[in-house]
Amino acid sequence: MSELLKTPEKLRDRLMEAENILLFPHIGIDGDAVGSCCALIWALRKLGKKVYALYEDEMPGNLRFLTDDPEGVPCFTSDPDIISDTGLDVAMAVDCGELKRFPAYREKFLKAPVKLVLDHHISSMTEPVGDWNMIDPDAAAAGVLMYELIRLFEGAVPDSYVGECLFAAIVTDTGRFQYSNTNKACWDIMSDLSSWGSDFSRASNELYESKSEEQVRVTAYAINKMAVSGDGRWAVTTLSREELDSMGVRVGETDEIVSEMRSVRGVEISAFLREVDNNVIRVSYRSKYFADVSRLASLHGGGGHARAAGATLYMSLSEAEKVITDDLREYFSN
Image (cartoon, rainbow, N blue to C red; front, side, top):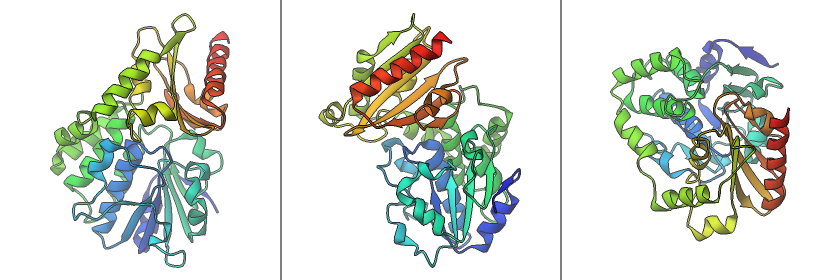
C-alpha cells in the first residue's frame, strides 16, 4: 500500500500511535531538512516519544545551533542502531521521498513496519516509498508541511524552539523569502510563529551572519575562478578536494557560492561543482527567472526544484565540468 495524502492527519495518527521513530533527511542536508527534522523531533519528544534523525554526512556549521533540543539531547545521529530494527515503529523521510536520497540508511527505512514521507519535491511523486506520503510540490518548503503537521499535535505547540526550527526551514528554502516559491502561506506561518516566542533575529544571525573566515575566503576564491559563458547567460565554477582541504573548508561552507554566482547581472543559470571524493562530484544549480534547472539535474539522476537543484556525477572534476558546460550549451541552444 502507498497512499498520497492531501492533508497531514494520517501522518499525525501514525506518529501518535508510535513510540520509537527515526527520521531520514537527504544527503547534502540543508536548512529545510534540518529545521523540519528538529522541529518534529522536539514536538514528539515533548509527547514522550523516542525520536532521532539519521544523517551520514557532517552537519553544516550554520545549522548546528538547531541540532540539540532544548534539554541538550542531540537530534541527529549517525548510529542506525540507536533504535533497533525490532523496536522501530515508524520511519519517516523528511524533505525527500526517494531511497537514493539517504543511501546509507535505505535498508533501515525499509525494515520499518510503518513508513511515512513528508516532502515537497515533485520527483518524489513518481514512485512514493512510504505507506503514507504527504508530498506537495506547491509548498515552498518541507517546513511548511511540517508546520501543518505539528499544529495537529496537542500540547506540542506553541514552542519557541519549534518556531525557530520552522523559521530556519522556510527562510533557507525560500532564499530569505526572495525566491519565486515564496507565497502567502509562508507569510501566514511566519505571522503565527512570531507569537510563539521564537527569536528570529538570533536564528537569522546564526544562519547568515556567523560565517567562518574559511567560508568567506573560499567563496571569494571560487567566485574568482568563475567562468561566465553563453553570452553571459551561465556561470560555472569548481573546487577540487585538494583546494577545499588546503583552505580548511568544512561541509556547508560552500553553500552560498552558487547563489553568489547567480547574482551576476545577466546570468540565468549558475552551476557549482564540488569534488567530495575521488570521481564523486556534487553539482549545485541555481536559476534566476525562467530556467528549470531540475531538468539539468535529472540528466544525471538528480533533482530538485525549477530554480534550485542538484546532482552527483561519478567522474573526474575536469570531466564533470565539461559535461555540465555541454549541458548548459545544449540547454540554451534549444
